[in-house]
Length: 335
Image 1 (cartoon, helix red, strand yellow):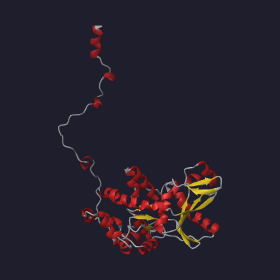
Image 2 (tube, helix red, strand yellow):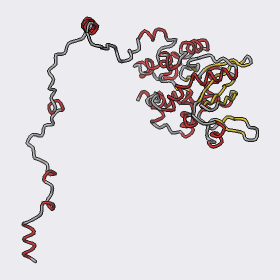
Image 3 (cartoon, helix red, strand yellow):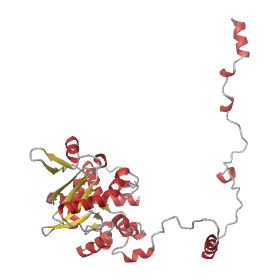
Image 4 (cartoon, one colour):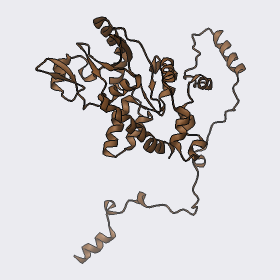
């Protein structure tokens, strides 16, 4: 046995040895190399500032070429500073991130001095921003404001007294929804649904833009405005992607958590006040000073339109939203 152990000690198999590649190599040089030293740039191109003359020469050569070529600017032009000159109020970010605002003690009053609006100014801004996502002014006025589509998220966080990072990222638009199939579905069918509604009910819907609160810090962008029996209603259209090719009646019976509920006894559709769209709709009614809202839910198989009246109790949420803006949102933006 002793002889066997001595033999094994002198004849260890390679699988029993510590991996040689795991052993760190000793180095006399403890200095940390930079990325540029480790991976030097091998290019030797001559850098020359490109001016308009060079671009014109290039353009002329392409025109005279015997080949089919294209010559265009692929990027969207940067917004011109001249746009700021035609805005009714200064861009919100130019004030929020100014050194003067950072240093001021009473930030709430500071914002009031800049952005308090009367209803005439609010109407002018709504007129300037018709077209909404296709109008660059609409994007400027929405920036760093809390808009109606996010009212429910803020109010729920307020009730829980918890404000997750995802909430603030949503408010500043960090999450791009344009690629979502449901959003694209709505954008692609907006005009179809609106035309169908106008023809069936013989109601003209006036396009509109963003309606700001008198504080200048909250906003709402309904899909349109309509006058019915001499009274103004805002129009909100929903295109539920999960129901897109189905009859709404059966879908709403099966999904009781949607914005619409079906009263089976009276065979009428009612509003689900627990749904997040409820605060969006009430916010639109409040901002536009409408008496109510016509909510349209559209699929390729059916369309439902219900009339929603203004809820006086909901108006108290405006103070909560403004309180959140000053005490939670602004500090988060500045940290």
